[in-house]
Amino acid sequence: MSAYGQKKTKFNGFNRVYIHKSLFGSKGKIMKRQLVLVILVFIAVAVIGENVHAQQEVERQPENQSTGFYVGGHLGAIIEDLEVNSGSLATDKNTGFVIGGVLGYDFGNFRVDGELIFRLNTIDSLDGVSLTGGEFEDKDSSTYVSSYMVNGYFDFPTEGPLKPYIGGGIGFATVSIDWVTPAFFFSSVPVADDNDSGLAYQFSAGIGYEIDFDREINPITIVVTLGYRYFAIEELQMMFASSSPINPGSPFTIEYQSHEFLIGARVLFH
Image (tube, rainbow, N blue to C red; front, top):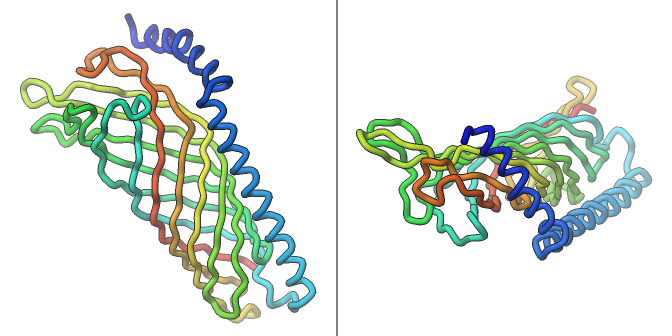
């Protein structure tokens, strides 16, 4: 069967059963509860932020408010939590890295932004099968994640330049896997080479340090941040390669979560 035929079978068979289960089964109920939780967090952040911002409008002079558009970026280390077939296939994973950028607007203590971010992790084994590639090949088994998120943050007002924050986001993410296993003559064969996309959400907390300048000369504020983020994607569907020593040609599911430790900076234009 061709690779195209394999994909078509995956969509017409496995996907149809999965979609039915995700909408009406226990997984679907869990996803709905997670989505409701994300929405409630957003509402709470928005209400708190708007109330604090309204209070600042009364108590502060307009020129003292840090409001305006901003751009920024962040990078850091991530610890991946990847479950294959609901954890029935054990994985041995390494830490990875994350890098991304944001464009948003700061209303005072409440801000919103759009974010594009990329993640990369390697995986050493799956269900006891080595995924480290051939002896003479510079190839690791990797999991790539790209996400497109809309985030809301609340920056706690303080007297000094240190500003703790909390936030949450919701969006869309794509997971691509490229897993191989050693073969004869120091080469490797594919275990899985597939991708899928779905709903993603995240929660974050950290602290920022504001660096202000004379706004008449240089009307910007630079904020350096240090934070933690929990990121997760709904259950996705993949297909093992026909050459895989693990369930060749069979569909499987993955659940991707990550714990991320980030350092970043953003430039606010007043």
